[in-house]
Length: 326
Image (cartoon, rainbow, N blue to C red; front, top):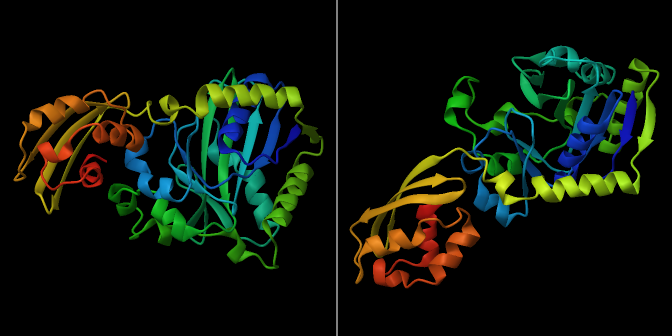
């Protein structure tokens, strides 16, 4: 087994690195990695319904889509990510619980009462500190997950849009109340670097043949190309969303504005506006002008700034109208 030494904190390069390893490695790998503050989406999730995008933009939080399934996670510098790649021939997913054993053993050695639960969660006293995910590629399996060591749970709760349907089955009222940090259960004080060192040592004890591998400049160049070609692009982060519809209504000084819109392939495919507002021009002109615009704040704002919004929606500003669209 190889231990991949990775001190990079660019989340887009880190996801690209996992893909590169999965594509090129010929023996089992283990990697620990940290990221600049980010939200990591599962491959099949809808960015707009899972992420509080205005909050993420205002606080400089990266939005990253990984190539594995599962749910959205929040990662800051108090979060440690782990990855295992098994190069044995596989025809499907492997046992999530079995793949989590090296991490659980490392935590129990520190006196942390961690356990596997449900489909893919790791818990401490009923609270989640890790979600795991898998994918298969070229008969190899990647199993990876998060380790909430000392995450800012207040920011986590603000950054993620947690649906009521997910929380209802957990018997709790908020995402913050359901998650916990590992650091609060340690028997002795330890920072995240010491925790990382312990994990490496523990996994090495379980896999004595493990040896360290440091990526070369050529390796990183190949990883960077993957990141730029795929994971940094809006087409990957937003464009993979399924078509979806939004209905929003809001009262402004200029009147009630109600919007029904449909988004396909990250662009406005339909927009219908209703309300008790006044305007000098037909609202259908504004609706038609917005069709085909990329569905993100910058593109919508750029288009609206070229139009005379007051002519369609008297006493409604561009920013107010934007709040109905997004």
